[in-house]
Image (cartoon, rainbow, N blue to C red; front, side):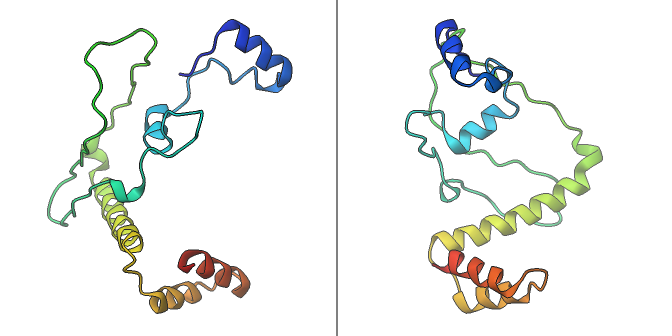
Length: 150
């Protein structure tokens, strides 16, 4: 949760009265979002990119696995101003098949992104794959190709 002082709250609500319902409320998945977007609100720089995350491949015979990464080291002393992460627990046994399928697909996406980030992209193959998508207009496909290959 992001909190503000009463003075800052009143000033902000005067400028943006419709935002009052969002201030001092818990943000769903704040910890997960802050991994990608970072907690630096002054500059808005991303704290990590997809190339910073190490992922191991998952073979089809194995059960669900987790991947951990080394993040910034935090001090052991906790303060009352820092929010504690609250995460819901899932039942892996019931969702094992779905999780394995999602994990496999996510691994393929990460592999493609790594190739893209290392400039190992086959531009001709990308063009062929984009042009195979007949659900979109040709101009949209051309714009998507220009964006991805440019």
